[in-house]
Length: 274
Length: 357
Ligand SMILES: Nc1ncnc2c1ncn2[C@@H]1O[C@H](COP(=O)(O)OP(=O)(O)OP(=O)(O)O)[C@@H](O)[C@H]1O
Ligand SMILES: [Mg+2]
Image (cartoon, rainbow over all chains, first blue to last red; front, top):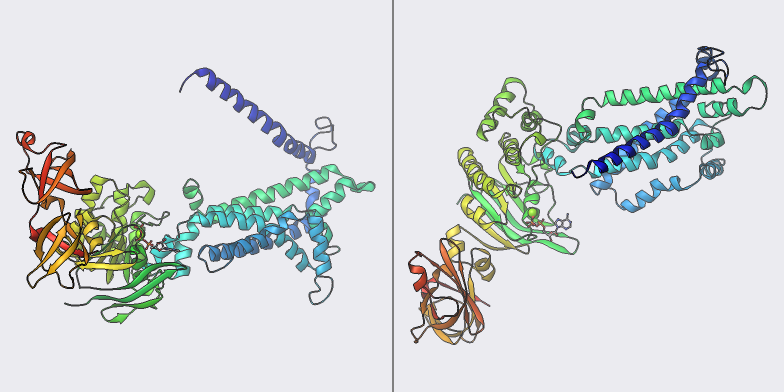
């Protein structure tokens, strides 16, 4: 290592990056926390702290959060299952035309959600599939926008695994399914966790697509929050409550992260630097 | 001869690439049989067909008379040692070895006894609780061998298992593999592109090139009686001198090589006028400072000191002959031909092999 000056510069760069990150990433989060814990914005420490908003969340947003978590959970499970199957199929050459599969799965990423929503409505308004106005259409839409992220992540981790592991296990007497379950799955678990979280978050926080295709009176958290933030009149325009529910959503996400990590067990820590 | 493993008329192509071209051979029980050939000649493909990882286009693969061509790998009961080991990264050495036994429904004390036995066999006691990435290449190799052997398969298949080790370790593991094979008596099909490795390990060797069997035999047969030019070149080193058959008698064949006439032991199927190669190994070539009479005359282009022997490159009318002169001493060096000297090149007819051009 030559020259302390260079290191000094590096340290300065570190500090700057940390500061910027701190400011742009954590400052808004801090505001959110503050908002949900104070009586009135701008009087953080005069009006005093309160749990009022947080306690009001279950009442005002209970149904919406439950729906959002349910839809996100189903979307996540379906994304994971489908991505894993397709990625393994492509890898073992059982699914042909990987480029076609890629294009099919990734295309929704290139379409503005508003346009995608419109397309979904038009496609499912008339027979044979009259799904407009049902939860099914909502699920289809969320699956379409979650798949590109989930599939890309799953496919990347699968491609990095050595398929001769499956062959080794099979030569030792394991069926293909047993080989995948006992050898490949523990290996790619961290990647699957990442894929699940991406799918879950994509669904949970989506506004524009849900806005177009969610059934009437089917409350979803992002839609409700929007209403609270931008409603012009009445008791509705309530930033504090909106912040409180957002905080709750963050907690939901963090606990989801915790659960998935716990489910994949030790392998998370062991494989993270393979 | 007891045909334990029999492969008959095996064909396999990958699109336009013909990887196996009518391959047939038989391996005896307890035999160490090696597939030897240059890179890309189809060795791995052949081994994978036997293991069931690859489906041959045509042909038969039978162990003890039972055709297993359509059995999935898990039903074939063969142990496979991969070039890059393919150890299960999330499992310890112990669990890697135990895997095959678990698949066979073993557990408890019996499983433990068998695993320990296998670990003993490959001398890995004390390292069983490490994961693959905490083991050295040689140790990983041992785990891979133990894992394949512990299930007592009908057949052990190894695909260049030593190619990822450094030279010294490779020597050591070579001896180990042979010892283990002798101790267990397991019929082994081994793949390598290294002829020294093949020679030191095998009972018999199959030489392959471009998907075809070139010759099957013991090391002595391959070395002293190569079936064709490819084998002569691939096994050891060989000079190939172009010539033409002058006369084919009962006892001997007369060949004209580089302007000289040589009488060589007869090789059937050669007619006068036919183009041939005379193959002779460098260690069988003798050199003398030119006395000025018969034999092939040439000029030393280069002389290399290689320790146990001197290697000469001699130019004979545009053709090059390599000669290895052994048994040299420090005092003797000066009296041997130097670079630029005119020399005569001689060899005994018994050391020559006639090959069709
Ligand atoms: N899955 C595959 N798809 C297409 N071609 C293949 C495949 N596997 C092997 N081949 C081709 O078949 C031929 C034989 O390959 P193989 O791997 O059997 O050679 P090898 O003798 O094991 O070589 P090496 O010593 O380099 O391992 C090669 O030309 C190779 O490119
Ligand atoms: Mg190979």
